[in-house]
Image (cartoon, rainbow over all chains, first blue to last red; front, top):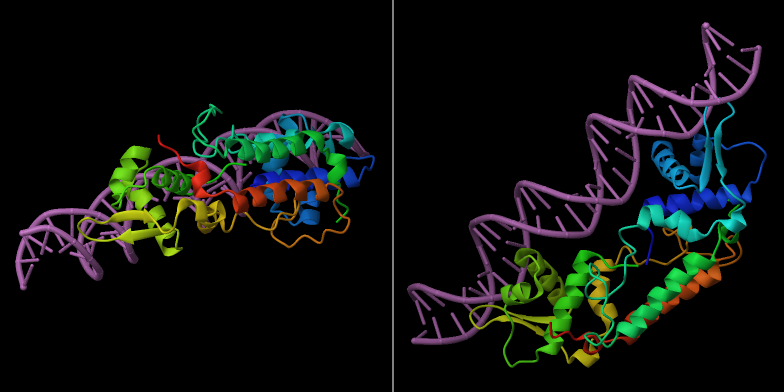
Length: 135
Length: 135
DNA sequence: GTGATAGTGGATATGTATATCCAGAATCAC
DNA sequence: GTGATTCTGGATATACATATCCACTATCAC
């Protein structure tokens, strides 16, 4: 029920950017210092977010990172899925690797499915604007 | 939203034992063959479950594993926590390492807390009898 | 164009979960 | 007690996530 380190870094970075909507882009190393994340590791995370269209990366002098859209228009699922892709799968309790054939087998399937649905709904309905952090 | 491999093995093993309430104990290697889990790895998982009181292990000839109690009386949280202990922590979205100070900071805290609560409730209210699997 | 700046990407180290191997201890059947 | 059986536990190997290092490319200021 926790996210991986990469995913948490991604959430914290976007949350910080949402809370600091300045004109110019924010340096990767500044972001790393603010969030106390290893700079070289965070840069990989930020690059991934840029590739998937969550961030806009500007190279060269005066460069840095910016949110690609207004924070209200970026769902958490977009931030999370590039990193949790393989872990947050279908969701059968006893056989996470194969699609769940709902019928029978596991009488707890329905309640477990409910937990999973609550999780997916959260990621789909919450935006970066909802988690902005001024820390 | 998935469990680790070890946790899934533990769930499947107890689910199988619940569905096959024979008189004698079940061999670790038989369990491994039925569930298609590497035998030497499963043995570590079963040993952990025995140490934490979920299983009863019998050594020597005619030995094997048995559920320590009736499956209705074993909550999933008992099966899961020896393996997810360090991952399933407090649950602040942006700072999983420290206890969440609920107040402010993250406006999505409440809905995320709801997801976490649903997860904990599931583990606390579902028993091994609810997930028994004859596969 | 030149030089400084900042993101990109490859190579590499470290840590943890997963998986395997094997010797030892406990137990039962005889 | 002897021998076969089964769990136990240490040592080791593999895979992947995490973290670091550094050369390269793109961009801006001048």
